[in-house]
Amino acid sequence: MPAFRSAVAAAGLLMLLAGCATRSVDVKPLPSDPAAFSHWPCEALYTEADKVQRSAADVAYTVDERVGNNIIALGVGATVFWPAMLAMRPDGPDAAELARLRGRYDALQSALGQRGCPPQPDTLSVEQLAGMPLKVGERLVYEERRGRTAARELGLRLQSLRRDQLEFRADLPGADKPVRWQQDGAGNIQPPSAGDTVVYWTRLLRPELGLGDVLAGELRNTNGEQGRVRGQVVATGVQTGFGRAFDAAVIELYGDVPFRRHTTRIDGVMVVDRKSGVLLRLELRSSNADFALRRTLLRVEPAA
Image 1 (cartoon, helix red, strand yellow):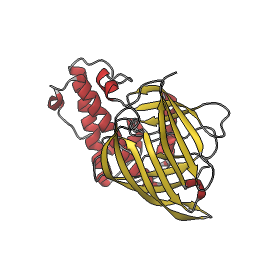
Image 2: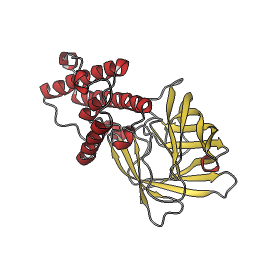
Image 3: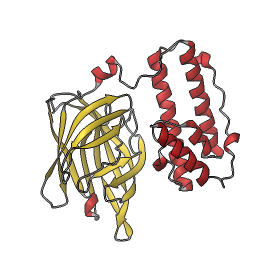
Image 4: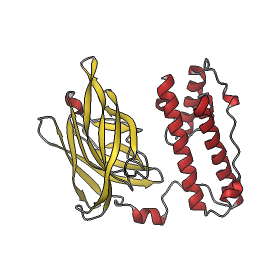
């Protein structure tokens, strides 16, 4: 996350949360022993630090839902800006969990220093790149149908693969030129900046999905509408219909979205690749026509 966004997030948090009961300075890290990680290789330490930060971001999201201060919207996302986390002033179990995570994170950083590991790279390791089902330059082509309207095409060409982010150049219906499309490693999408109404999701998916996992997050569209959805992984398996193996997770979805000043039910199914977070299929049913759609991966085109 860019430094200026971190600064804005921290300043906003301090102003918005000044009236909360628990002082930020009272949330102390729960010490964790760096010796527990002394024999870990650098790559394993990097990976564990990523997991700790994602868990801390989940705590932030839980607190944000409860107090309604839009912490996530202010810029605290998958990468944790720790001063802003502490400025949230959580209490009870959230404060205890944040203290545990901060202590573990500090221990990991100490272990990285003791082992002489270089700064964590933004790029994927050779092994991680080899395990990805997509290569930079390849283009995902989807067919999307909204309600009874004619099918339209959505194309995403992979521009870069980074440690916790995939960036695409997107050809979206209604956009006069390609736009930036970003998703994290789990498959959660940042808001597209142009085009006709596009449905996307935030804070819904997480890495290493397993059978039976329960999920919760937000379903949004570029008209500014958003709803809450929950899901459960009901099946996993390998799909090989695109000239490569996708490690698929099938997720049943249900929740509520806006409709005529009220809300209406939404349900459906999502299929994503567990290694990259790439969407393979999405089917949503709802009385809100902007959320009633089918998006299906048709083919993967080679790099230009």
